[in-house]
Image 1 (cartoon, one colour):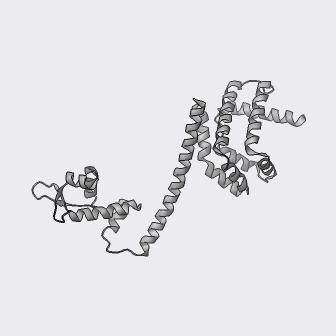
Image 2 (spheres, helix red, strand yellow; image 1 turned 90 degrees about the vertical axis):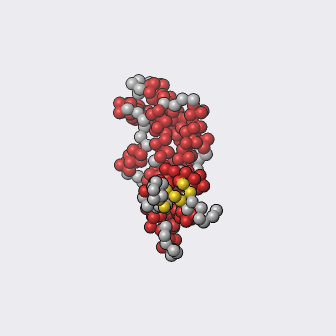
Image 3 (tube, rainbow, N blue to C red; image 1 turned 30 degrees about the horizontal axis):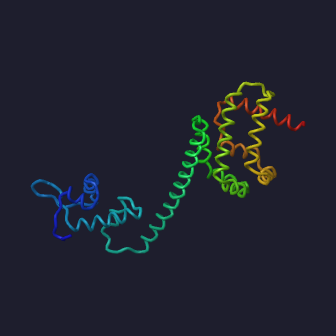
Length: 255
């Protein structure tokens, strides 16, 4: 490329791969300002603009904002300050990477669940997604109450086990909707709760159940954990479910 070669904005766009709209914007904010034809006012780009654009794209690649790029663009050299700035950028990118990985795993899980179920009511699905979304808060709660190992074990469960738990929850959701309003001593209600608790305890495992039972956690703190992932039922349905669960537990204790 000859250094004295001149390019109209359209030609420069093709040469560099940047859209005309982006080039116009860079000109407007003073980031990349080419010469202007004195008669027509059209932009005229040169080899020096190619070099400047390379610097812009390099800094953008490293994660700098356009405002930051403007302040760095014409520096003749860089010091350790740039290294410090890049270190902060790397930390931010690592956090973004973690968030993206969590979102990707959640998407894969939802896709697989929908393929296997065929159809899932929106309230149940959003509840499952919300539970995934609050996993970080749940971990922080577990850490705070010295139950880190519990969260680590649960996080390490296989995708098959997690999908099975999701499917169990969907079944439970449907049954609550169907049985809502039935007497709490109805055999079908008892069967529903037995199945739900059995599957939940199977997912947790005996060791984790003992750890949770032995944990010295206040009732208000337990409520805080439950509030992170509430059931997707109406207030009336939840009240009925609580009454049914209380009756079931009371009967089980008498056996």
